[in-house]
Length: 65
Image (cartoon, rainbow, N blue to C red; front, side, top):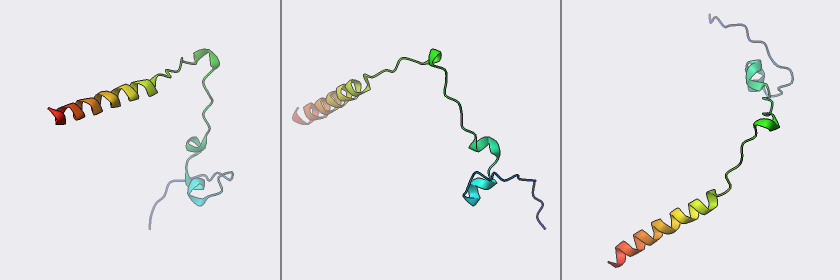
């Protein structure tokens, strides 16, 4: 016979798999306070464009020469 540890089910989790998970897995984390909010770096699109342009230019130039 198999020995299993005691698992308390969560009634709010409707799916049988989620009912078997421990309570700390289903706990919703609180958002960080607004005072600790970091400045979002929005120039990722420009960096990706520049990197793609340079890669394409290098590959195209290497095929020409």
